[in-house]
Length: 337
Image: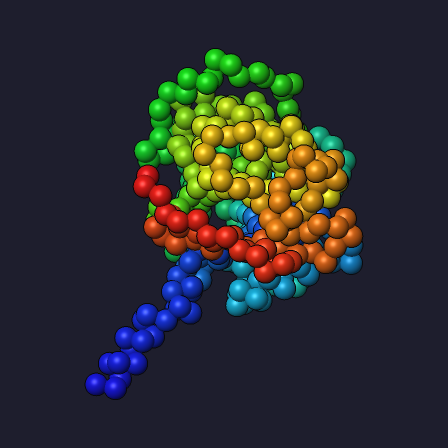
């Protein structure tokens, strides 16, 4: 009888319930990307590795949070594209922590000296783990969650995700921008799902490529959380995409002087149904009118300690966002889909 009672108490404990969340850490890499995802069953994926140099600053911040999440290795490291603020930290990270599998869109497709250098360094570490070249529609087999590649190497999914595919009446008003032939437009973008919860991360995918995902039909559907494309840069964040995915919350992995542009921020703020914007940094360019509330910003000073944001999601679609700087958190109840 006593053992049965103990078992029931353990099953109902808050600690055990917390272990069943999908946890997403937005690590401060000063305007780059490093997003650590830990599934409810302990599977892990890191999207991008931040910058190289800075005495291993970004790799150290990643490893610190990986250990905080009780990871002994990172199962998958997904590189969205080969720009230095996304792939630059790979060598330093691989020297500090075991990586199971590297995931990318295939070879570098940009003819620039710095990108060629960073891709060459990335190639050197691939032998330390398995390697997957992802194509649109592929599933990245992270234990406990579903990760679907939506874009890769300039291509995108040809058929709609489940429940999506509706015609988008806003497509007629789309304004195109100059064609982007850089690695940004080749970004490996993913949709991450845990039960009813959905998070979209398109890396640095640029304006015209974003349009292709939702015009003439919305191939993605709606999401709960939008990790803002390209750090909140005005080269991305096309309103036709942001309105189509209809996020409740936006997470912006901007730096003090990188991303967080006023026009991109305003697009998100004006999106119907948006409840909150959370930012890794206060944007100097944004000023008082184009930054979110202080309690929703992880780093308010340009020279900062590298605080992080953490999202914890339940399978019913409810989630909480936590700010490590001030210990502030806000919860978002599940909504009918």
